[in-house]
Length: 238
Image 1 (cartoon, one colour):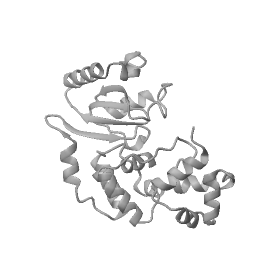
Image 2: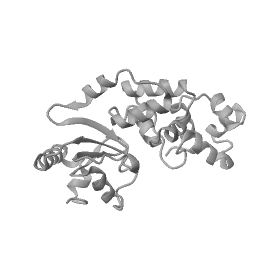
Image 3: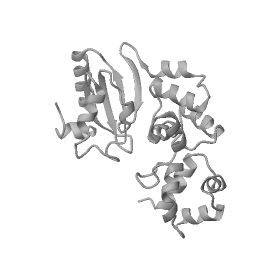
Image 4: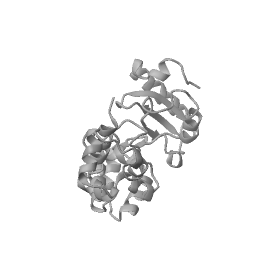
């Protein structure tokens, strides 16, 4: 189990900040940041401000960077150039902090075009390889394979298609389909299993035809076998 100091350090590094950089934003000394990360003097009275700068220091387990995609590399570079933390950029772009973290650390590689556009506008920096990203994520005969944050309610995909939930280790644990993915996901919100780290992130492909959606869903569940834990246990099937 990660300590608060560990989570703070990982969040700071994921934001591309040195201890001195974070100290300047917090209005404290570099030594104080070092004490917080070592755990010798926890930042009890500063947690709210830390959350506003780094995002989710307390709420969820921190994840170390895993290596980014073309989008993640652009995003990290552009964000640092704009001197914005992940949480600050998320607020400015109207996306969730998890969306940005997942892109920068390589957990997600194919964001929705509207997500890219929101980030470009917030950063004032255009993604030059956008067409290449779109081409790489396209599944011939179907559509684009798109990553999304299942907890970012305002940006859930509202199209028809097949979706997959992944846990914190990126293991696919649930496959679903529907005429409105957003509506189906909202149906999951009251389920006991719909929470981090059981469901950490998701991806979907748009498929308009109902019969084809059902066929793809069935094939995926059978391919995943025991890995599709929730489907296998019949916890939440239509």
